[in-house]
Amino acid sequence: MSQDQASQPVPGPTSRGCVAGCSLSPVGVHGGGRVERYVRLVEPVLRGPVVIVIAIGAFVAAGAIGGRFGVALASAFVAFHASYCVLNFWLCRETHCVVTGAGWALLAVLGFAAALVPGASLSWYRANVVTIGYLVVLGLGYLFEWAVAARTGRRALARSGPEITPTTPQPEPVRMVTESNAGGIDDRPPLLHGRSVALRPLKPADVERVAQIQAQPAVLRWWGPPDLEDLRRKADGSADEKAFVIETDGEPIGLIEYHEENEPDFRHAGIDLYLADDHQGRGLGTDAIRTLARYLIEGRGHHRLTIDPAADNRPAIRAYQKVGFRPVGILRQYWRAPDGTWHDGLLMDLLAPELEQGSEATSSG
Image (cartoon, rainbow, N blue to C red; front, side):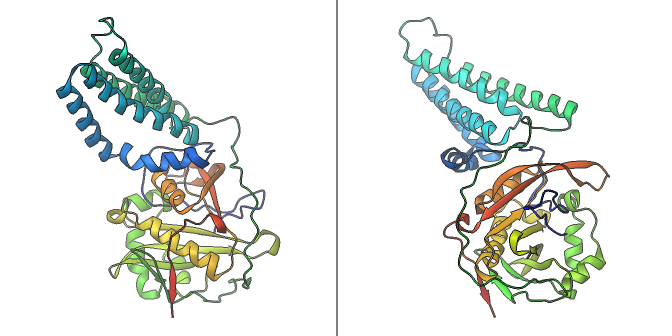
């Protein structure tokens, strides 16, 4: 699949950025800096199974302590989660955060008041009330999100027009600019090493295994059924897209590819990838993207990279943000799903100086 020409008014074909499937969609993403760093920092403990464990621990401990200290502890956790939801809504517009951010903030304020205000006026507001309120607000938040999705087809609230993430112009690194890779030239490096993955050129012997991975449900959802002829062209190096097998411990677990636009005034490269169902959510996609991004910047002299996941593929977007990609704007009805319906994409880009510090990708051979 070719990448978009992000410098042009009309983007090209989509890359759906399949790291994992998710129903949450960041529409009209904007912002960054300290807020985005804070959200990234706390997100691992406030989403998914981890937050369930933490919430149970906080509320059980608060109930065991009881009294003003108990309600203060419960309220502190609720305030922490509320701050994440408010900032996450500002960044990503996730619909349920409208309710959870405001609702949990109110619960926390009442809790701190109950813990600090003398007298018995708020004596009824204790840790068990905070716990029940927390769960009620959570349920109302996702109920609201479901209602919005049923009406609009989105689980995020759009802004009036696509937001553009401001970026400070950066000087292009002084590097040797390579020639176009079009015309059947196979100039892929023999091996790229990441932290946990290795990338090697897709070969004809890999086509069957890669096709099996693409046919898995969490990949098929975004990519559609495998095209064996297309995979064979990528395997022999004749396609414009330069494809690599993603391996960990010698096992093929996915495919990653890049496509270059070498028009001098618009030069950039785009990335696309997918991982096997049972290897998603383990940081391997992030490692693969980081590894290929470093090769494209340092090995092929690109100053700018793009990627354009489906707007409702939240895990993929988070993986790209960890590498340094930033949201640019929504691409409306950008890609067609296997069922024939059109869906939004999210254009993201990365400038060479923004590549995550400390990432390592070295080539062999």
